[in-house]
Amino acid sequence: MVFTPEQDAFILMAHFRSGTRNPDGTWSYSLQSCIDQFTEAFPDANVGYQTFANHKGVLVHRFETKNCICKGKTCGRKTVLTEEVTEDIQHRLEQSPNKSIRKLSAQTGLSVGSCHKALHKVLHMHLYKVSVVHELLPPDFERRINYCQWFNNNLNDDALLDLTFFTDEAWFHLSGYVNSQNYRTWATENPHIFVETSLHPIKVGVWVAISRRRIIGPIFFHDTVNADRYRTNILLPFFEQLHDDECQYGYFQQDGATAHTAGSTLRFLQEVYDDRIISQGLWPPRSPDLTAPDFFLCGHLKNNVFKNRLHTIDELQQAITHEIENITPYTLQRVFDNMKRRVNMCIANEGNHFQHLL
Image (spheres, rainbow, N blue to C red):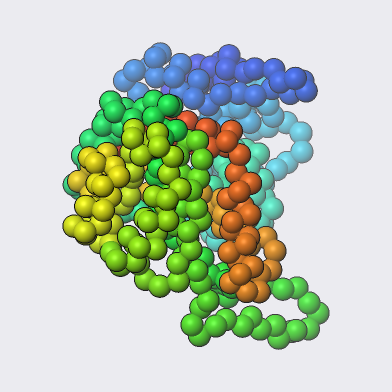
């Protein structure tokens, strides 16, 4: 899009109007505030978020270096980052946002340092990590909305969430995973370092149940979970640790795995929970972003358990148990507050992925 001089002037003024002074004397500026002001003043202008951000960066840099926003020659030391060069870099990144700085350098003829300076100091662009999420199928969106609306109508109460358990299981490998493409070591000569991995990885399964009040588990298992093992080795020990109020008023959530939804399993659950079961039918498939064991606990454990080298399955199980026991009630309350926000974000985003909005 080509911006008019009037729009350029408005964008610059909106930039400075959005500024707030920080305690350390520096200033912070809100890109979203600028966009909102611009949209209100020019409702017919159809400008993409990234295009607007990049153009604002160019205007601010132009004003700070030349004390004006008009195009033209600058005073002072000559620079290779002319306006035309910067706009060329901006255009190349808009066409291919995954382009590396080295490839950009090769295409533009600029040094890597000049490209880096143009991206960070002139265009105010930064690298962001790509999040890997479950692919959602067309029927999933409505199911996710239906569950979230049900949650708000039936379960969005702290006292009830204190009694309700969300559950899941995951495998933890003793050796972890080593990606050879990302494993490097600096040396003057090739040290010929080898990383040994087992032909049959040593691993342990971990099942946990989380409520707003407490965690039951970990319950460890070593074989693939079928319906019989799920009832005998997981659900039965879980039931034995329930309090009376949790049995009487709480809900039980599980995903739609075959072992979870077998008729014998559901009948076993109904003996304790009656119809207060959140499972296949109500629980939307491919939705780990809505349940605490997935969006919080699994990542928390894998980030902390493997900080130290573990040598045996016993050490691995002890480390997992230790990390779970160290999770405080305050942390659980924050996790479930996060769950409520996720439910509302899912509804607002019509069942689509919403992590980028949190």
